[in-house]
Length: 140
Image 1: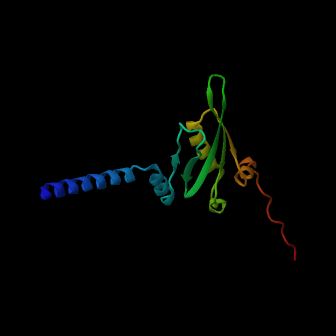
Image 2 (image 1 turned 90 degrees about the horizontal axis):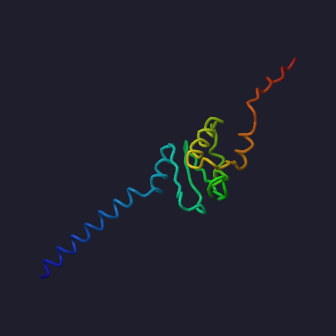
Image 3 (image 1 turned 180 degrees about the vertical axis):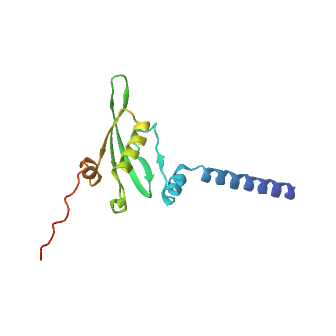
């Protein structure tokens, strides 16, 4: 009888370990962290919960987006999104094309939303492609 209970206990432990391993491997937060480390794009969002912010990572920078619910012509939907990064110092090397890529990915998920960036990204995205004048020449 004791041997049978021991076997049952070992079987239960194996099932628990396998369940925990599968749950860990399928965890979206882990996928976000992995994509962040590998500097890939990953979009983590709970579309059913408008109050919960979404997270995305791109080129090793983590972005957070705050969603606001409103009305469209036909339904209630997310109509406004504010996006920022908690680590703006990691934006070195980002171009306007990178931010446009992020905007396209967010628009795929929320087509009716107006997207606003928070500072300092907002100022960078709004500037036109200006050519800066050459440095003045020093006459000796």
